[in-house]
Every structure is written in C-alpha cells, then in structure tokens.
View 1 (cartoon, rainbow, N blue to C red):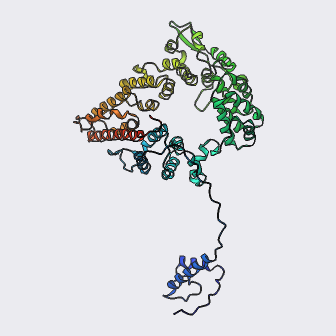
View 2: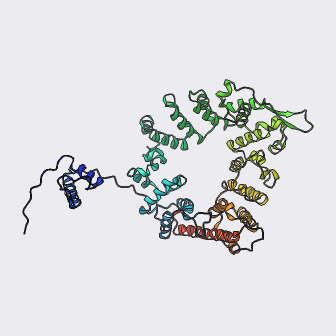
Length: 545
C-alpha cells in the first residue's frame, strides 16, 4: 500500500548551514530549523540532515566528461623474470625499522638494497611490471638518490603517469625536456624551430643531445641566440658545454668571460681552466708563477710563497672571486684560486724539474703548505691528473695519511676519484690496514661496487679487530651499512666464523659481543640476499649478462 505523498517545501536559504551549526553547538543550545525543542530534537536534526543531503545531491548538475587520457606508451623492453618481480614488490613494500637505541637486529634493510637492485635491472635491460610503477614512483619521490635509476627503470610510462598525478611531477623535471619528444637531429628545420620556440627544458634537452653527438654544432647553435638569452638560461646552457669540452670551445668561452653575469663569467673561467692549453690557463699560470718559487735562502730546497696583494680587474675577468668567505684571508683566497686554475704541467719546470711526488715532498715556508696543497688537489681533480693525485695522496700507510695533514679526507676522496677502480680500492685497503676504520667511511664511498677482494678483506679484518677490542658495533654502523651494500656477496662464506658470540675481555663494553654477532649475522644475511637478487635478475637475462 502506497503512503500518501506529502508535499515538500523548498529549502530555506542557508538551511544546510543552519543544520551544521545546530549539530556543532548541540540541540540543547540551538534548536534545528523546523524542529521543536525537547528530547526528540536530535532525531529530528538527523532526519532533516538526511533529507537535505538527498536534496543537495539530487540538485547537482552533471559536469561534462573530461577527455580520456592518451594510452600509456609501449615499453619495448622484456618483462622481468617472475622471481625478480616478486623481489621488487618486497623491496618496495619494506619500510625502515622504528627500533631505537642503535640496535637493528639481524634483518636486512630491504630499502637500502633497492638502489643496487635497480642498477642491476637497468644493466640487464628489463621493463618493470605495470602494477609496480606507482610504488616505484612513490619510493623515488621520497628519496632523491633513487630517482635517476628508478626513472630509467620505470621508462616512458613514468612520464605518462607523472602527467596524471601531481605527486610524481618530479619525473617531469628529471626527464630531459619534461618528457617531450625531441626532433630528429638531422632535421635542421625542426631543430631550429624547437631551439627558437621551445620551452626552456626542451631547449636544454635539445642542446645536450646535440652536444653529445656533435659538440661544434651544439656550440654554434647556442651562439645564434646567446646575446638574447636570460642570464640564468645562459648559465644552464653554458654548463652543457662540459660534455665534449675541447680547444675548439675556447673562443666562445673567452667571449663569455666578458658576460654581464658574474656566475656566467665564473663558469666560463672554470671551463677554460680545465683546458690546459687555453690562453686563460696561461694567464693564470703566469700569475701563479709570480707567487710560487724555490727559496734559495734555506739550507734545504724549500717552496716560497708570496700571495697576491690585490685582486685586479684582469684577475676578476678570469674568474677570480674577489670577496673572500667569512673566516678566510683575502690573500690566501686569491692565491688558492690562481693555483687551482693553473695547469699542473707548469710546476715541474718552475720548481727545478722535479716530479710531482718530489714537489709535494718539499717543505713550504710560512705555513703556506696547507693552502698550496689544497689548491693542487683541486687542480688535480679538475684536470683529472692521476700522477699528481698519487703524489698528493701519498702512501696510504704513511703516518700523516691518518691525520688531518695538508690534504683533508674530503680532498683525498676526490683525488681517489681520478684513479682507476683497482688502484682506488688498493689505496683504501692499505689505508684501512694501517689506520683502521675510524677515518675510512668517506674514502670507502668512492670505491667501485662490489668492493675488490683486497678491500673487502681489509674492511672485514678491521671490523673483526674492532669486535675483539670490545667496543660496541654502533661506532662502526656507517661502515657496516656500507659493507652490507658494497661487499662482494661471494665473501659471505668467509664471515661464518664471525657469527658466534665471542668471549668478552674484561674491559669490554657490556653485551658488546652479542651485538657484534647480530651485526655480522645481518651482514651475512644481506650478502646472501644480494646474491639471490642477482641470480633472479640473471634468469633469462635479455642482455645475456
């Protein structure tokens, strides 16, 4: 039986706001509109709210449907092996542990293994499962160190997804040209049109692509609009010339030394100083030679230093920054910049035909050794001079290598970067064998992964010595974390003897032996997990690796 229809009055203006106010204040203090005060007021309020909700929803006008997004681009790479796909899901689902007190237990930190997994998957040429892309982009959003490898692995669909979700916009910024397709570089008309009319990111991507293939053509393209570019754009475009930098770029860079932007001038000077045969390098060498010479008044051969007394206009034009940072003397600041920009080939002739090793061994007058050696370090890194890097590094077993010395740990790490992977690992292994692990963390970070066997053995031996000394492993947590990610997985079997809880010496920290056993158990478990990851990725590897 149908109930008789009841006419419904039109809602009063502001009826919903009145109901919300009554709900917030309570029906004892505010009677809902159209309701009598009393015990039934709350029920009447809910009934009125339900009816008003239906009325509001029924009154909405449908909007025009948004256009469908374009289909995601195809990824031509082969799919991951099923075991590797499951492993990726596990790594992406892991979250850092919340346990405090410095104790991590024996479970591996899976998120710390994700960078190595991504690097290996990219090396093998696999495409990701589509369902893993959101979690992969979320992980890269939270960790900038993951982004290059994660976006390479995600492929073209990362850009497609980033256009649909603002949380992943970093993928557009990290992709050359914001993911826009570049024209065929052989098509001069399209190249010119994009260079003249494209967005800044597209123009940077275009210039970088041409520079990688035809350095001269890229520089000539940049020269066509250089005078009309904004200062910040000129700086970015100039930075692209680092790729394929050569003597043919010198005239353009010399012109940039007169740029109205100080940052552009400084970048042009830096690039010219990396060309040992450039006119700027010769000018800097002449200035530096006037500051450094052999002091013949000393009993033994000694380097004398007379730093510049002023920074003239010519020095500033060649990239010398006149204003020293807080805490630095002006003369030492100018002197360091001159030596840093001077070709290292200048010094043997200036200092009696000596080799770099012999030059570095010479005493320096008036406490200038630190400033001079630090500038030589920067020059060796900039000019990629391995011979000077070896001389400045010295022997890893030398007593001064383990202390502050004239060459800091940060400078040593940069110098090591100029050496080959095997030589780098050998030097750091010798350093650890002599000086232990307390100063080695920064040096280990520049060594190739997985660590070469001599380096791996040196790290494990040093950790074992620290364990026997009775200290807590937390003092070496940074090195232990590096070992988990960088030690060759084949070393796992050598560590089995370190898993037992050792006998603690009388002066040992309480419970340290148990904590060390946990730490080594986690290391072994992580190494075996890394071995399993590589094996899973090598199943049906498309690259045949």
